[in-house]
Image 1 (cartoon, rainbow, N blue to C red):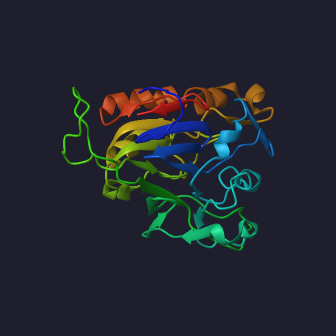
Image 2 (image 1 turned 120 degrees about the vertical axis):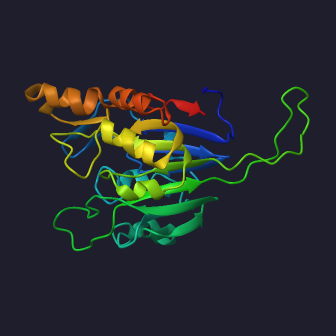
Image 3 (image 1 turned 135 degrees about the horizontal axis):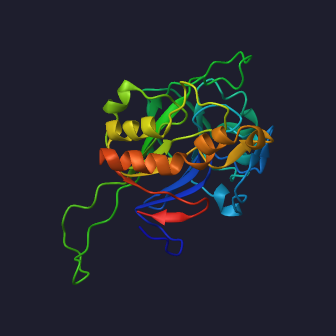
Length: 279
């Protein structure tokens, strides 16, 4: 792993906090569930605001319509020609983004923004709020990047003529409980595993660190970055419930890394917000 100067790489990842992440696949930037604000209703960001380049991407994927995953002001910060993939049925909510919206459903595969996006099912309430009429599905994604060039000789630097490396790939399940059909997802280079939340509990539609490690084991990955933790927390809740804050906000990343080490299924990578990591 390294953090070199920006430039095209086979596989790179920048976690901006919460679920918001940018994955680089062979020069294509894929933004996931961008939430670039400092405050959201009763939630306050406890990490620095993402810089301007957090809104640079070739395609944006939105897993579901909850406010902390489908944040309209953040989506409007992306260039007007960047396609935005959303759960089918949520297009009306995002109508002001225009014809760059692509509504998708589980079981579909789409070529968009230079990558192949396999749309997966998630165990989560996909509605904007409990009283919403629209019931779009919550989604996960398996994404494969463009083909890479031919390999080069390690000593001479000359092209070997060997088969080019396989395109880089990643898995992002969105918010979900642990699912049996995760075993059917093809292995990936990188898993982005949601491991926490903002309290007061996770419920059955999120994964805790141990469940997230099991999910990564079911899918298969070379590296795994924990997301959806350590970023937002309700105003005042930390003072009245320090134990929950510690369990859901402070420790999930390390607990996930420890659980993953026990399974031996992937190498954990604990990223700091806004740190670009090349894998």
